[in-house]
Amino acid sequence: MTDAATLAERVRAGELRLYELEDHADADTAAAARRLLLAAEPGVDLETIGEYAFPAERAESNVENMIGATQVPLGVAGPLPVDGEAASGSVYLPLATTEGALVASVNRGAGAIRAAGGASTTVLQRGMTRAPVFETSDVREAAAVADWVRGSLDRLADAAESTTSHGELREATPYVVGDSVFVRFVYDTKDAMGMNMATIATRAAADVIESETPASMVAVSGNLCTDKKPAGINAIEGRGRSVVADVVLPADATEDRFGTTPEAIAEVNTRKNLLGSAKAASLGFNAHVANVVGAAFLALGQDVAQVVEGAHAITSVEAREDGLYVSVTLPALAVGTVGGGTGLPTQSEALEIIGLAGGGDPPGTNGDALAEVLAAGALAGELSLLGALAGRHLASAHAEHGR
Image (cartoon, rainbow, N blue to C red; front, side):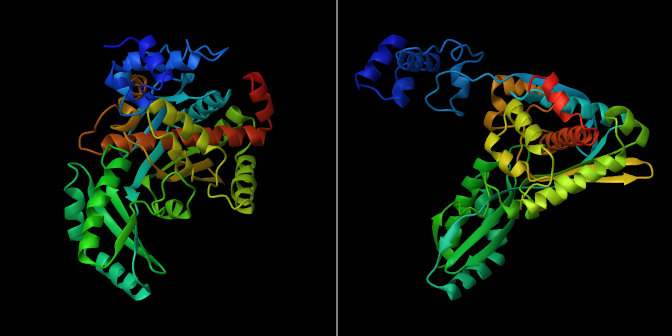
């Protein structure tokens, strides 16, 4: 095997390319060689980037041209009591972030939820999507292809499910735009987030459409999925897990915890989260759900780019006779406990903190439980920020925590 310095020199000489280094050395040596190559520039010091706590080969399915690892401060909020259909009990929620006051805010919200006896959660539906686009000769042919798809779910399911031992095709809905036909496939991917699973399965189903109709596939993703982009279809139809959490906080606990009233918090929600979001034409009607979802995704090995659809949340608040009612509905939370980044050591350990590392029994239950925990965490974050705004102490909280 070649040492790192020799590999770096061969890259400089043009004998090797960055992605070829693992063919000549183990993964850690290849990463070290890339660091040497980059550190040759004046003033570049990659010592900390090179101090990672796992074998580089563990990340070969997660990253290319590895040079090391980026460390993000990791905190926990809790205990957070969750009373769900898949998740039950009090958990500590790991959150990776560089934003001061975020973990403290979620922690305060978790305390309020404890005072209320816990958050109720439920997964409304689960289904990862992929939507290829096909071309036809004209609108009549496009309509005929759409009709064939509507009547052929069983045939499409046989083809799609032949590629996976876990995924199940639940829906295949066609949409016609001129001479283009989009088919939005929806899969139950069990405990996996399932994007790769859905893509491979859809390619097999698309082959059937091409063989049985005049349609020709242009791209396996036609953006009607919709993956990692703001889209109303995800907010309406859902993607990944559609999950909701709610809590009723007694009026006296509201005043003790936040120094304000249920009525004041409800008004902030109406004027900020509902009216303000509507005026902005926002796809999210919430205070900062992306903060909690993003920090949890980083900590727990989820696909961080899917925070885009994961933050399509609606926060509802109502002042009731028995106190303050708050709910958060997340229609498109793409999460999993197997696959992707969940197998990396630190992310796997973070999943173990909440007891959800690996597959569930029966399959799908761990993924559902993770969605419920994150919904409860988002609820804690919403409750805390709305309370801070209503009590007019948001600025002082950020000043205290250095932001």
